[in-house]
Length: 458
Ligand code: PM9
Image (cartoon, rainbow, N blue to C red; front, side, top):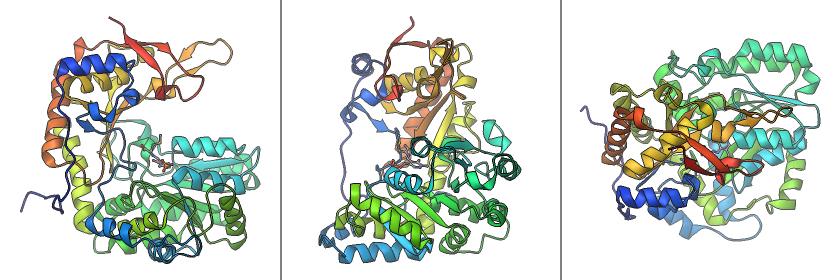
């Protein structure tokens, strides 16, 4: 059979409120041309993020009812711990309310002022927590990762030569840990190969530098390894995951992605002494070590989600539906980060709208046009998010790329929703010359993209 079907039936539905273009133009103007400020009820297809937006299964909802809400040592904690250990294999499993809480605890315990933490590409919250602990967050992606059109089966890989050079330059004593993000979200949702993880470990080991994996999209990464890496096709996803994590000393995880839940996370380590300090910090802000800011029912839903995400029919549907959208718009000429990533498609707005200079926010202009055209909410990853002011002259500086990310929630939208999204993007692409830039009328001193207000230049 050629058609790969969604491997689930729909039992509960959530209506989408239809709006007209005229209504959306009014709504977006009132929101200051900022999609973060638009009510979800005014969005037809919400591709803002794949984080915490999954549809849970009947089994997960059943787990919600089974959740044991005992304050200490609940049954649900042990089920959660077994599920996490069964995949990741680490000795200590510390629940947290989401990924960034795991990051904050990890970096507070491991880093100090003047330290350096390499990663293929730090996600925003990872970078922010690392810097908050006084360390410098260094991105070491391979060269292809910086070229949107370049093809590479494992474009999320770390540049291992650059890693070795960094250790030589700053000295191993200043590198308390190295991280690798699977898949590499900030680099286009691109996978990391087993060979790359193995090589990173071989470089770190003689220096005694521990390796931590940012595991948010670990199952999607394992699926790409099975499809693309030599000698992996016959292995199960679980076996591939066990090998990925066997090279690591610990991991951070936002369960809001590949654990198929709406909230949750965890931190793992094999180091007994570190785990003790991490649990001490956990008690201070998250909660007792067997619930860490979550309810027993959340731990049940995570345990079940971690089993479901390893199913090959699920992963095939997931990765194929993302590439289906990517392929449909690529065939019409729309420039995207190639090849399509696991959880999202990233449109290259700089290539699509060369007539809009970066300081007039081309990616934001495209995101706004997709909302006006079809009620699609995406997210700008460009100058609005990453633009800076020159510290000396105060001059505005552009971000490194101009991307619009269309992140696909898990098990939420069907093929016809994606056809609708593709049609809208192609329609906008065909009249791209008419799109105009924007200018800022209000910006907060940090993380301005969440609250900025803009207006169209025309
Ligand atoms: N990622 C995303 O939309 C959530 C929004 S954050 C503005 O892609 C990685 C690779 C992530 C990630 C979240 C986190 C943080 C860590 N690493 O959101 O704290 O993609 O659970 O996870 C978002 P939490």
